[in-house]
Image (tube, rainbow, N blue to C red; front, side, top):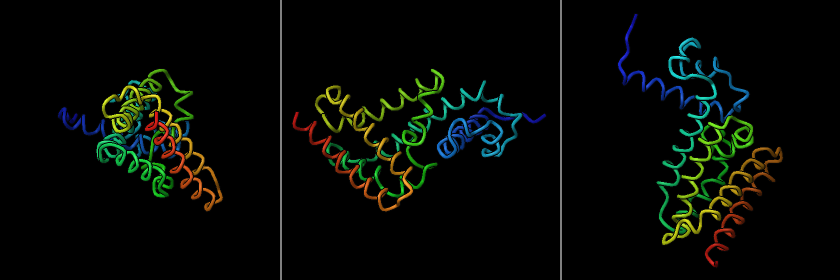
Amino acid sequence: MVRYTKEHKQETRQRIIATAGRRLKRDGIDGSGVATLMKDAGLTNGTFYAYFASKDELVATAVSDQLRAQHANIVEQAAPGRAGLEQMVHWYFSTEQRDSIEDGCPNAALLDEITRSTDATRQAYTDGALVLVDGFAARLAPHDPPSARLQSLSLLGVLAGTLQLSRALTDRQLADELLEQGIRNALALLDAEQHN
């Protein structure tokens, strides 16, 4: 029997989480079985329970990981203040973001399923979403981020909902126009907060 180091086990666990996050965004929570998720990670189905107690635990962990990665890759990399918010809006409503579901936003890919998920998954989502929202709020109202939290949560709703709708449309021109309108709507929401 081969014994692995703690580092190897942690790397393997992280690989399962990362590949599961991509698969979940592409095929959905219900459309992704344990066997498929483990195959994506290059592991056998039988090793799953060495890392997770249940699929629900993996889903909650993957959702949390995806939101943490989105925050690190987008929010933390953006410029401070209003310029950073505009950067994030333009990135979010890009055709690349829309067309790459598995590499894109977990909000737009999984929100409808998270609503029907376990309390643990919904809590993992809530915690991760609020980190994103607080990153928006810190740019929207740098001297009083809590005052902008609700407005920032509304911004996240505009972003995710518009992207979901754009992904669902079969008319590519209309889908592209919707992304452009999404930019205008999101910036108008930011302007409304600036004037309050």
